[in-house]
Length: 67
Image (cartoon, rainbow, N blue to C red; front, side, top):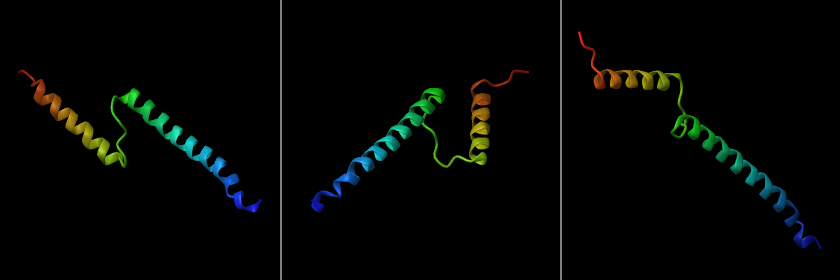
């Protein structure tokens, strides 16, 4: 009777693990749909500022201002 006691814990742990995986995949899918690319892990304010700067420089090179 006590030999299968560990199996009582397997089902709840499996449910918890499954829900964590589902929640992570839902967040990934929503972010990718909203922004068109996966979320960058560890992206702080400095990285965001540099990304904006790079985009601005690339746009200026693509469409140079005419005087």
